[in-house]
Length: 222
Image (cartoon, rainbow, N blue to C red; front, side, top):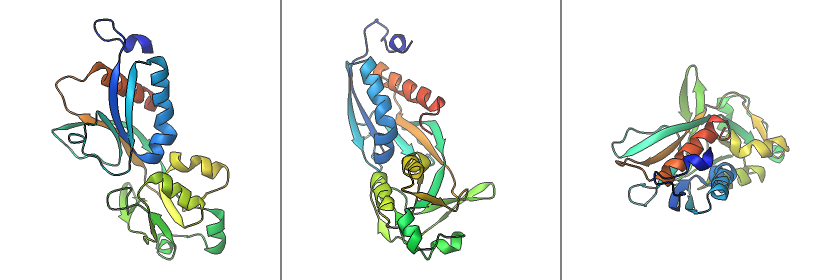
């Protein structure tokens, strides 16, 4: 079925180059294996993959598709498709928690070393559940890092508390390199696939959109 849906109207197999821009850690850990599977089935497809947690301007950077976290603003020039909603957690390395008592409430976060993003990268704020809504807090910006993969590494190295989407730290939590704190307090984050609004998408781009949407439906992006 995948091979059939990848055919252009004239019956030719899809070929050509697609530029996909994605967050560093999520792109490497979650999206890259899915994209590799697409190329294995359709070897005439070629990818330009850019990994950055800075927000690229799709219309200026010649990006065909982009994956973005968070709430998307309405735009007459872009189309956004919701892919998944990921749980976020606050966590730290056992060594850090051994020398700094784990926070028991939100107020205690202010007494901790924290790992946050940058103005043009991952967020400087943390998102917390607030009744049926969400509120943001600004933790101490002890260490500011420009990409999610480095934030995971910094947390594992014991530099402090960090809030990240669960898929980025699930393996480190499972093997004991990170421990969650304040469980259930973090608000989830939405993941979107975004592309420039055009009269007609190229068939190869449409196929990748369909494959990523199908992967999300199977829970592969959670």
